[in-house]
Length: 172
Image 1 (spheres, helix red, strand yellow):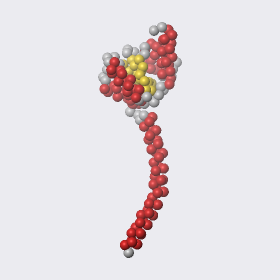
Image 2 (tube, one colour; image 1 turned 120 degrees about the horizontal axis):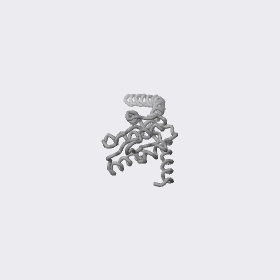
Image 3 (spheres, one colour; image 1 turned 60 degrees about the vertical axis):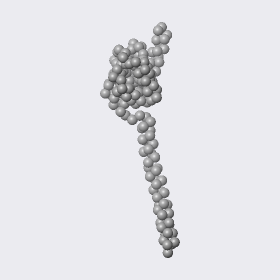
Image 4 (cartoon, one colour; image 1 turned 30 degrees about the horizontal axis):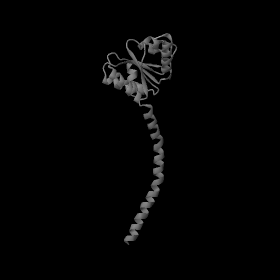
């Protein structure tokens, strides 16, 4: 790899570290190509990505960044899992680690906050952005449904009273 290619990789990694909601660092030594493809597929489905990069280039990309503490985790064969959604990459990495003992999560970063192994696990247990949006919409929609039900209830009560009166009149 010549100098221009290395500079391009450092720039790409810098963009990943700046723009990602969460970055998870893990060892992947011993994973087969099929297992790595499985990880990439799962991450892509969740809206994230997986990147294998030279540790030295990643450390250069981290210089001066708010999540520079990730540099301490970059030893050995490391892979970066990242996503804009602050929870997606952590969830996929945790699920993948349960299925593959060779995939060892070291830690990560969520914005400026450094995460250890337990921190990544805690982030993975949070609801995703889509789940939060759905629960907010449900909270907003519930009062409207209750109001509509309350407004419609007197009309249905009047209708049932009128039908009861009509039935009594026909019976008489």
